[in-house]
Amino acid sequence: MQFIKRYGGFFLLLFLIPSFFNFSACRKEEPTYDKSQVRLIFSQDTVKFDTIFTTLYTITKRITVKNPSKNAIKISNIHLEGGFSSRFRINVNGDTSMVVHNVIVAAKDSFFIFVKAAINYQDKNNPIEIIDHIVLEMDQETHQKIVLVAWGQDAHYWQSNLIHKIPYPNALSPNKMDTLYMPYFYWDPKNTLNSEKPYIIYGYLTVRPGDVLKIPAGVKIYFAPNSGIWVQNQGSLQINGTLTQAVRMQGIRLDADYKNEAGQWGRIWLSGESRDNKIDYAIIKNGSIGVCVDSTTSSNSNLTIYNTIIANMSQYGILATQSRVIGANLVIGNCQTALSLQQGGKYDFTQCTFTNYYAKNPSGAFSLSMSDYVIRGTEKQSYVFENANFVNCIFYGNNTDQILFDFVKAETKPYYFDHCILRQNIPNPGNLFSSCRFNTNPLFKDTKGFNFEIDTISSPTVHAGNSNGAIGVAEYDIKGIRRSGLPTIGAYEFVEKLPGKATSFPFLFRRPRS
Image (cartoon, rainbow, N blue to C red; front, side, top):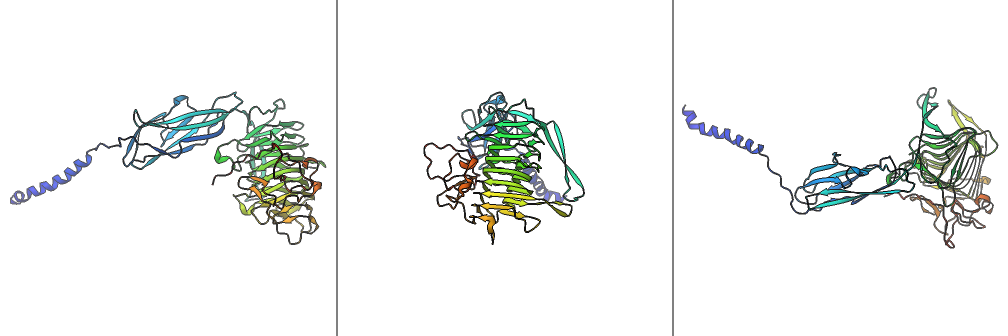
């Protein structure tokens, strides 16, 4: 009892101290916010979306909003000025509400706003410009805006309704077969194409036997993934672009991040017995294979291709198998292989530029590959390679060897290079390389910007070509410039100054951002 009287007050104090702190910890202190007119800092005050097609969403873009104050701030409201009728949608740190209330930002901290756009205006031939604003309200008097701009375009939409099954050997078990499923639809010859609106293709636009698909000048075709053009036996594809109105083919994504992205769609596939296929003045880019030409038994060429640019293909610019192809004024670059001639065939190319600065697989990228066989089981089955003639052509790129010669028999040499520029180590060229220059830089204007015009008169290509190559369809270069008596090697004729106003075939690729 004496113990309690003597020490009781002490134990009571020990009991009350933690209770006091617990009580203090339970109190909810009222946060304080910066009451001054804080100006938020935006990573970008204007967000732009390149041309998008009606009914399709853009990619999502991110805006960083930073609080520069030493104290926390509270943003009362974040919303789209256009409200429910806006063609944009925002996401504020996961909140997709039309109006986001009371966003707390700690001192020197930041948060994200994600924004995307979709345009549903239709039946308009010309591009549509849409403008809106993201409004951030600090209080009734203080607010800031972020500008949103998008350009939209209505289009014709064609979709697949059939499936084509393609068997192929299993990579791990060659004796087993896998199946590739290719969506497609048959093109109706009554549906003539025109340049008023672009065409959006889902699946493979397929040309039946006996039909001719004519694509006039100025037409723009955009392919979804696993889409393209398939010309069946006895069918025909005729692309008729002009110097001022090229036919354009690429993927459906036009955002800046996809401008130069390979592998976005499939291929233009010309079956072996398709006939009278012609491509003139076309820009084909960002697919897997630009043009795939199957084997033919015909003595006539199953593809003539002139004045055409093929770029950014994840596999091949042109893949020809036992085919007969004639090409002139071609620019094919930045593909896994620019031009691949497989299992033999007959080929003639004049005044062409084949380059390879393909960044995704630099060690295995070529400007040209040639082979005369196919592997069946464990053996190589060879085919007759009639000839491959190249006159006034450039083969250049990052690798020291830009050409892959792959023949079953070492003595098989069906090729002939006349007045060409080649980045290639060939100790004894012999008579298969006439007046060619090896490992001399052609001095292109801008390889990173996909501009393979010749930059200076000091280039080894200038006045170095065979005059016999600059005749017929090659009398004028890909930009419509008449070639001189001694032409520049490659697709572009070098001129120091164009007389009057120049008309040029557009090479519209945006230089990749560093």
